[in-house]
Image 1 (cartoon, rainbow, N blue to C red):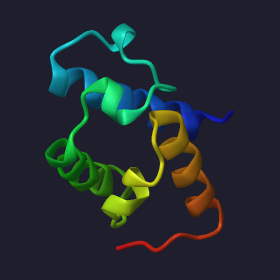
Image 2: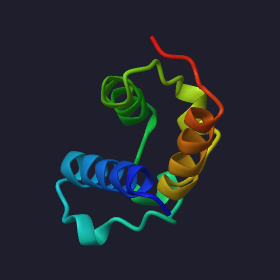
Image 3: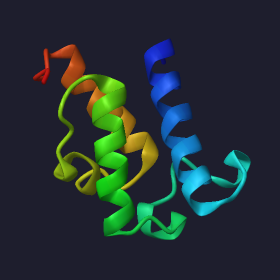
Length: 87
């Protein structure tokens, strides 16, 4: 696992913790979004903020089709490795 993966995982974990008003230690990056309390409205905010962080447009399907923080991190790192679109 590289530093970029760790940074993304930490960012996503902190985002979820902040929105849900819980500690980051309470967020399991391997838990499904639903069990973390992430709903569709929160997903849209997450996608918008993540787009800013990554400097490219992140589509909602990129989060919705990856059911955990770990899965989203793996997807995003893979997309960037193959030259994902930059906005």
